[in-house]
Length: 277
Image 1 (cartoon, one colour):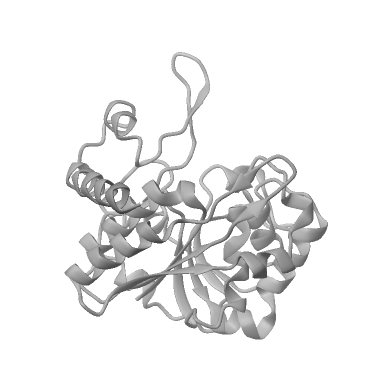
Image 2 (image 1 turned 180 degrees about the vertical axis):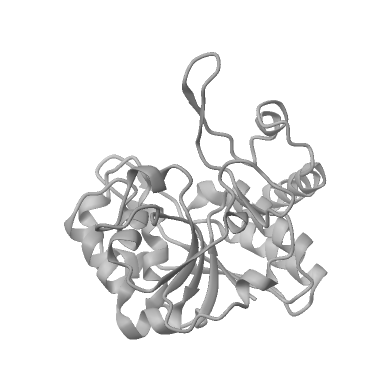
């Protein structure tokens, strides 16, 4: 199975936990690709993900299955050549748009599962990965809150979350879907630009069950848990954002302890990364 992540040096913690969760829940060989870049905007400078992180994760993957691999692909030049200028200085980092360049990278296979680095696998995911992609650019899940506030044309409840996407790169390369998304990100400033472009321009998508991208309340059948921002209503209305690497908050705010074995592995891997950096 082919898996794609995108981000900068700050993604390391999430990447480690997410990859370890995949290895825990799959016995199949995994080809994991990590797109990164060095990017500057008017106020910020972002560093590419270090090789040390990928090298350690590659060893972890091959320990589980010798046919697995974790590969880092630096697309700094490609990104600079197609800068999404209208959205470089938003509250979201430019790295959120790296996935929109995946059709331009020949090393990436025709079928690939994109995951945000705050997504954790809880169960085997082969069934989701192996589904038919005929006449489909991507498969995803509705955005838990966005489906109520963002609509595509006259349709309601069709706004999708971009944190878990099964991509048909063969079709996307053929029909130019990501090329249109990149052009929109270059020309128009948007809230959550990559996700907005995907939702606005898609004509060939499939909506799957929330258990493949659970953004709210974990259920027994949940396959992927996505640690997104949620709303809390007691004692006052407020937002709560807890990421997997914020282990104390995962324990105390979310009352989740079932990832403790994963967190122990994460700490070991992180220690090895720091020793080799």
